[in-house]
Length: 238
Image 1 (tube, rainbow, N blue to C red):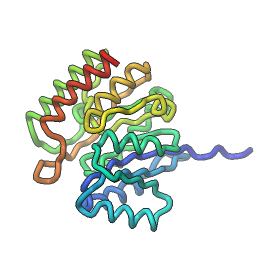
Image 2 (cartoon, helix red, strand yellow):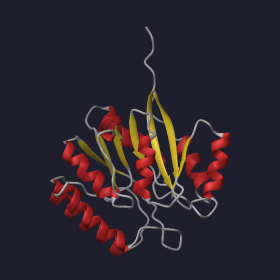
Image 3 (cartoon, one colour):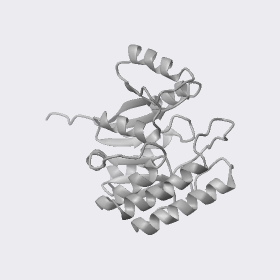
Image 4 (tube, helix red, strand yellow):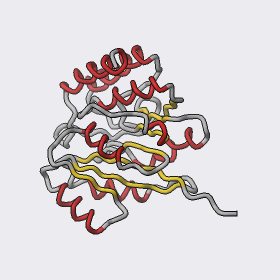
């Protein structure tokens, strides 16, 4: 009997100005063990970095044909980078991994579990249901909770952390989602479109090591207002 080909987890990594952390992040993604029979496709999308990240990735593209590396000539935002990355996916499952090490790739197996068990089509991570996290900004926490509540009211889901980076999809679900938002509005957009598809969604706890603004955190208060716009737009008017 011929053995079944391995299934593939496509890891989409949007990158902007992370020259110092990117080698460590890539090492962690590559070294994390996945369940038996699953391999990785690693897709990196450089969003026109200005700190040497682009040069680092161009060098990697020459040396590492096993990596899928895409480049934006103009900075567009996380959502645009994910749109480019999703278009390059060849795997059976797709997960988003930020390049800033706030999230730990060693949690991939936990996120895969509900899909491999046949319970879920999509798995969201949550920073608010029991895992360790770095103690940081109170008002960011409040903002996240309010945005999640508004998203839940519009989508009729009961998520605890709509803004969490970790979202893992079956390929057939990801293929049905046409991404539109260029920046961080991609999180409520993805949530609204997954809800509209009627996909089976599970949520699992993930740890979180957030950065301060001095350490390079990029999201700001303007993105909070954009998230409100996206929640209303993609749940009620699209």
